[in-house]
Amino acid sequence: MILLVDILLLAIAIVLAARAIFTKDILEATILFAGYSFMLAVIWFELNSVDVSFTEAAVGAGVSTILLVAVIALTLRFEEEEEKSILRNYFAVIACITFFIVLAFGLPDLPKIGDPNAPHNLHVVPRYIKGSYEESGVINIVTAILANYRGYDTLGEVTVIFTAGISVLLLLRRVLK
Image (cartoon, rainbow, N blue to C red; front, side, top):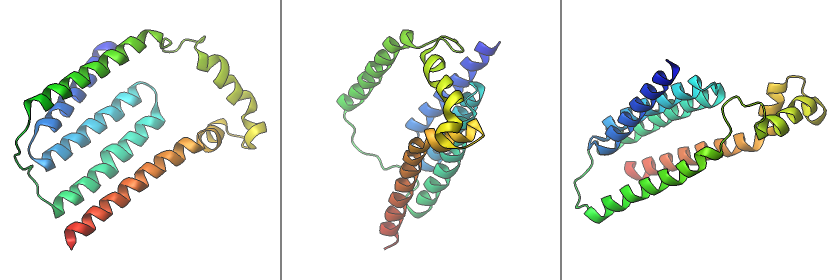
């Protein structure tokens, strides 16, 4: 039953992504992108990765959608037709298929979900559990991991969001002139 739900969620995400790619209405594409992002948040939640799910919902479905709708309000809503090369479309399809094949070759090397002998369960998790208080001075293990061990990761995410926000503001400033 759970596999069926996973397949259904993935199918919905793929349909939303495909529709967002092929629509000419930029507002519709933005709303479809928000739905796709929210569907990914649901998938992450179903995979018991609540922190990633929350971030995807907040940034992907929330902030990104608001910024894109704000930009659309100040620009054109529909994509202009342009002459597209058929070779360009074939190259894009070939690139996607190649990327999928590369990922598929790496899939057998991944540990099984919940495997107690997976490398991260043998090396990283015990270190976090045993050394989090000594290394960070924080009593709560979750807080120690998020604030100390994943600090650079969080700093990188914040930098990306900040850069995207500044870029949108610069684009909006150009349009308003």
